Image 1 (cartoon, rainbow, N blue to C red):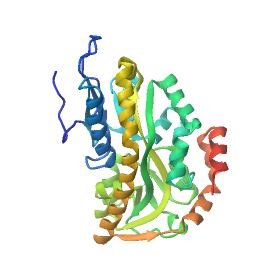
Image 2 (cartoon, rainbow, N blue to C red):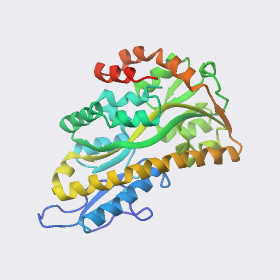
Image 3 (spheres, one colour):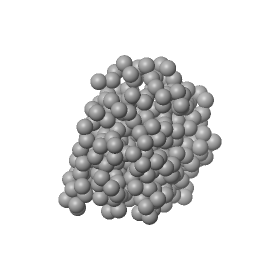
Length: 330
């Protein structure tokens, strides 16, 4: 068997490069792909999962971890899973909105009260039903979707301290309708841009701001070209651990159980580490001269939630999902 290039202890990509022809226990290699940098908590957590899966299966299942978009960007890997050319992807479930619109919901600002409530929603029957549809209609199985990514904040070349500061702000947004319309309604100059072009776009002044979780921003060195971090906490995404359904079905029941067990065992540790990484990243940014700005989060919630029904109509979220979210608003 020819091993893929390793990154650290594992190589992260999910393309079954192993022969499953024999029902006997041939070694199965699963390549797991992420777009996050090697030090990101999702990458580190998947390395732990890989070690545990190898242990639980007595070496029958080997996971190779490929960070930093080595296997392609998120949409490429998701399309590959649907086609059966990519085995696993670990990343924000928001990307799944390309297949089921309701997964775009975390791209709508302030739909969740906070991290714990967001995670509980992702663990709810509504999100499980969304995941079931994904398996049936697109051949992608979400094994878990309760790994916190942390609240998203703005980082910008000019200070953003109030809602009024969003007026005319050239902000990079993912090329997804939910994000675009949110910021347009707030008066910002929403600029759809692939994530791979965002650093350069901010550096060259094509955009003045972007937004991600603080640990992600620091890990990708955005603070070196944008000197203002606004802790708006406007989105709470969860990471999904996803596998191509045909790959999942090719595994034995014991191997599937081992993968699920390893992921579940890692979840609590992962989420604790996210909180630690965010605190450390913000402290490091402040020490390196970044201007840290706190906003009145409740006022921002009320402002953006006043546009929620308009966003729902534009994007087309299901009534069941939107009614449940609104019923839980603080």
